[in-house]
Amino acid sequence: MNILGIETSCDETAAAVIEDGTHIRSNVVASQATLHAQYGGIVPEIASRQHMVTIVPVMRQALDEAGMRADELDGVAVTHGPGLAGALLIGVNAAKGFALSNELPFIGLNHLEGHVYAAWLEDVNPEASPGFPLMCLIASGGHTDLILMKGHGDYTLIARTRDDAAGEAFDKAARALGLGFPGGPEIQRAAEDSVGGEPRFPRPVVRNSLDFSFSGLKSAVARRAEEYGMYPPSEDAPPDAQQVANMAAAFQEAAVDCMVGRTLEAVKRYSVKGVVLGGGVAANSHLRQEMHKRVPVEVIVPRPALCTDNGAMMGAAGFFHFRTGVRSQWDVDVMPSLRLG
Ligand code: KG4
Ligand code: ZN
Image (cartoon, rainbow, N blue to C red; front, side):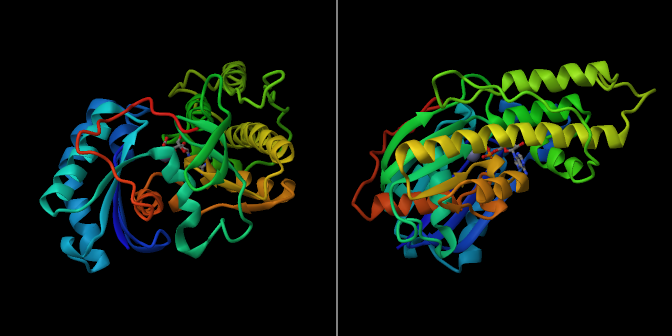
């Protein structure tokens, strides 16, 4: 079964052709990161306008690279939430138009479900090894969720963030340290040059809950950057690169410690057989290492390019719905606040 997966919920215009939920025949991602970088964050209006320009060429390229015609496809799967309303609209309408005109089944899916199903891509098969139940940590620019997955399509939300998402904390900490946008990869890169010695940052906890909280950590980084005279940025006194690297590493350690600690607790509490990592923050090398080191069950984490937003993950998620005969009605709408579990 060949599914065209489409994703436009945030700042990537993406389309992919996925065979049987696992094999990537093509995966095209047009990132808008450089367009938004000058504003230090995503500008929703610019995102939707750019999706409109890019969506058709990206879909065409995905078909070309897969060597497929539209009539060889078996379905179209698209993100219809959560995300930016104007950005979601472009993908949903492109997907509907394409599916209708080619008489293909169509399904609107939860973006977070896509991040979960990225773990099935490239012949990694979590349901065969290690098997259900799985604990999924989806950490992105908008979410930090622990989701218990007992089987396909069976999700229970175990924990979420009470304030900032993990990716948001990386982006804001990067800004306080004078690093670029998106902040996650910048923090990771800077942290590699750390020589250590920076005092620890706090690891905020929410009492009697597995929920996450990152705003205290983010504020602690901003306050210390102010104390060190690094923030607000000044052209006359650019920050010391070594100090930035040490701070980036200390922040990254704290953020990762929060995520691994909560996941470990959830693994024990729900006796799961494995952990699935997904979302842009799962691209973080320190998080990946620590999760493998500290969690006593199998950890399945897609390669970094499949952790950040892409169409392949939507094609994979689409397969698992289509194979049971599920599809959406044509009046399915965008749902910017859609939840999973
Ligand atoms: O899943 P994603 O591509 O888009 C959303 O659904 O939000 O996640 C984007 C987030 C951004 O906040 C970005 O800074 C973060 O993922 N990110 C990272 C890394 N790569 C991307 N965070 C930490 N380390 C990374 N290597
Ligand atoms: Zn995402």
